[in-house]
Length: 169
Image 1: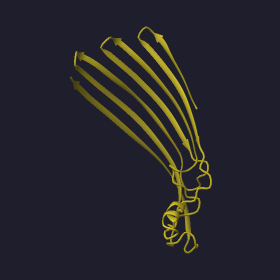
Image 2: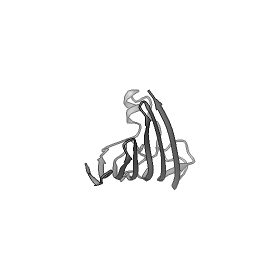
Image 3: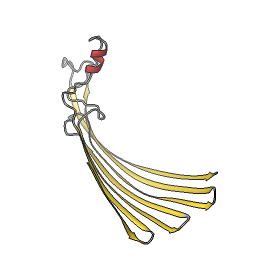
Image 4: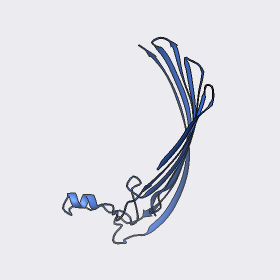
């Protein structure tokens, strides 16, 4: 589900605000079933119970994005973008459980002359991950040999992206 509103705020200024929600359901997922089916039961990798690969697990995704577009003169276009997104994995006991991202940055394009365009952008991104897993002393997760030690990790990373291009036609 996505909703978006865009409006002219001034003569050369436009603004947009959008919200998006996605709900992915992954029922009866058992890690290793694909390999067991492809090899007629010959390969069934040992994996901890309740461990779900994040791209196959149930997920709720929410995103809010805002943009301001400004053209001070005919040959210059600028955009400021701000975005917040959150992913929650409600059925995952182990693996990635939650993550959110915050992005902000300007984008500028300048038509210097006919056939010559310059473009530059900068993006700051803050990424947060929360994941849980198990450490085991045994080599077989299914028989219970050894011991399990659950752990949780929360990680925050910052990413800076800068780009400049020039196009001559």
